Length: 200
Image (cartoon, rainbow, N blue to C red):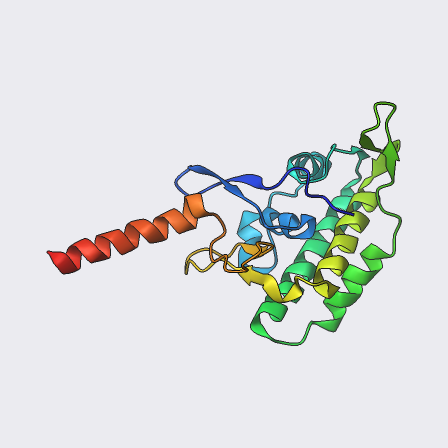
């Protein structure tokens, strides 16, 4: 399903500056909530309310009505960490970790969020969903991305101190930055300073 109605998340730099980041896929939005190893320090999925808040910020439109358990939050973290390792291995041209593929496939095999048509004619989600439905929807989006036409365009930001992952869905396929207003702008400022130093 196309989740492109609302594009991008509002993130904050280490200096507190807000900027818009569109990773291009629902599953990659989940990677902004933390991750395995060194990314554990960015963890924000601690309790059910945290996962519900992420769903509210995500490109799932409208936001589904969710009842999430603690175990389902752990499932979301497990999927995210597996997806993180698979995506990084893919970007590096390394084999996908088989255990992590199994985690993604198991999550994708569960029932996902059920779309419905509201009386107004707009899309909505049927009834109240659980965290498992949410996790399955993210996992199925990951399967679509990793087996689809844009798989070769999954990248990390070109800034050396930024590790955000995105899929470049632009027509020319030349996107380099997580966000032009953040890392793209920082690069321009650095390049301008370097030019001024050379001229001075």
